[in-house]
Image (cartoon, rainbow, N blue to C red; front, side, top):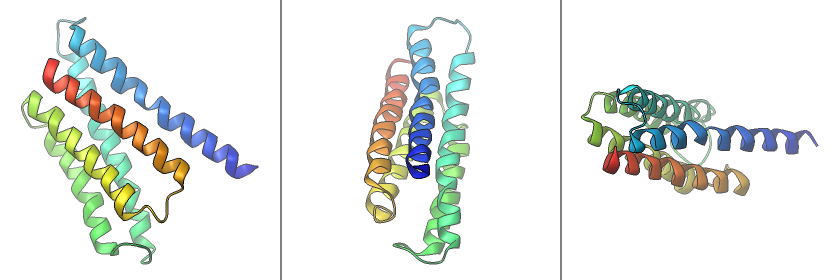
Amino acid sequence: MVKQSIQHTAMWYGYSGLIPFIALALLIITNVFSDNVCRVMFDHYSAIILSFMAGVYWPLAMREEGPVNPKRLMIASIGLALWGWMALMLPETLRALAFAAGFFFLFGIDRWVLDVIWSNLYLTMRSHLTAVVVSCQIVVALFG
């Protein structure tokens, strides 16, 4: 019973996390606000979420067991967080594409490296979240 409650909560938080991506992408491409506030919020939210998701790898690496070399998992965790930070310094179009690549790479680690430790429910949710986030990034890159 507890496990189902935690899974339900995780799914609720995961899918709710898409709201800022979708809302801000729509505001950016429709140019509702003439200033750059929505773009700054979108980019900073992207960096925070990419870093947060990559941070999951750190405690997995500390276990020193599992499907991947712990040092490589720590490097991936740190590298993706730094990728998000450095993406903030790129021109707007490249910034969104860099975030898209970061989220896609993050999903690749989850799906093809760590798939033996994640549940099918989690991997399904992650595939949905990644598809929406990467789509928002591409839409912002092309039309923002």
